[in-house]
Image (cartoon, rainbow over all chains, first blue to last red; front, side):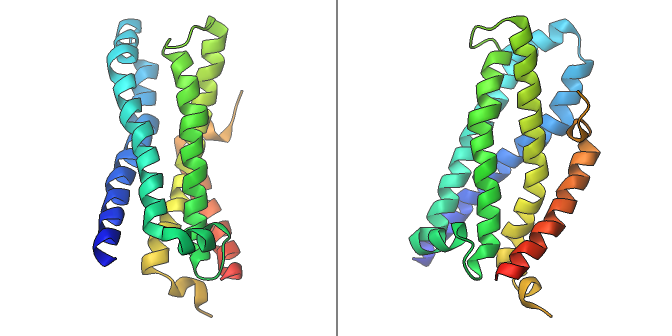
Length: 164
Length: 30
């Protein structure tokens, strides 16, 4: 069981770093860059850069969640999501990560398809979709901070929750 | 259309604040 568990943990980290790394890239680098870029650069990015980044982003998000669920296993999965006992620590991380993953697929990706022209839309619909995708992406940056805290402390800082 | 999430530093600050709040929530649960 130890062997398969480390494979799941490895996969969870690999996919998670890919996902959250791209999330921070979107928010700290790509967003401000596209705001400053010329119309020609923006069009090029929308065609050749952003779809590639979003491909890795959304599939890494799904893979992270699946590896995380496999890593927990059935009993701990239930305890985590019901915030039961010591599993409430990883449970809070799992809830935040789940909300983030749903955000990626249901809000960010759905609206980015409109922004990138993969779905036909009027210019004002594109503007509204860009705003929704941006805010959902910012919410994920916000949630990633406590998510990483609970993920790390569930393995390396359990005492923090029982001390005093 | 002003929103605190428009600012990345504010978003990060809110992330730390939320961490503190959720820490006490989870501490009360375990």
